[in-house]
Length: 183
Image 1: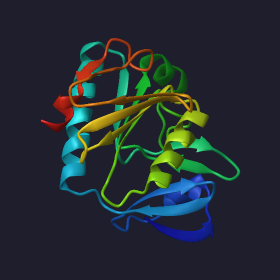
Image 2: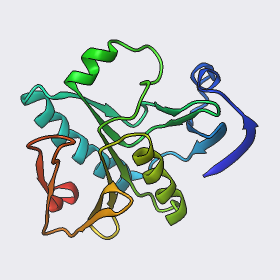
Image 3: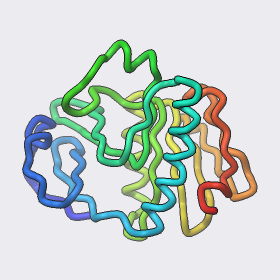
């Protein structure tokens, strides 16, 4: 991840011309994200497809793709874009249609680890999500065929390929065998 040093606002990020890269804004600092590789994209899509199908069948809300920015903080602004996100129907109805970034954290944020991600970068994202009100953050590790579920800094569950992931109160009723993410 390349860090570009210049204080930027969420509005400036939204108006930036498309240069082929994805960006996140972390406490006013613009961070260019490298494009996802083959495995990352495949794993993120497998998870997103299963989650979106469940959410749609049960009319629970909206599942968002990786390009969707969520504004987590202001002054300085933070806009994060998880690989997959879920926002409940109730919150979508309250907020309404939004042209720019979603104005708050999703109930669920899913991040798929890329080969270039550092532990520090992944941990920073997890805590940004949790600190902003996300109920559950799932970190998917394609190289280890595992997932780690964070509900708070102290409530962390490591899941192996043989385990079942449960959406609990973030996505009620959603259950997925971890092995299905990597099949």
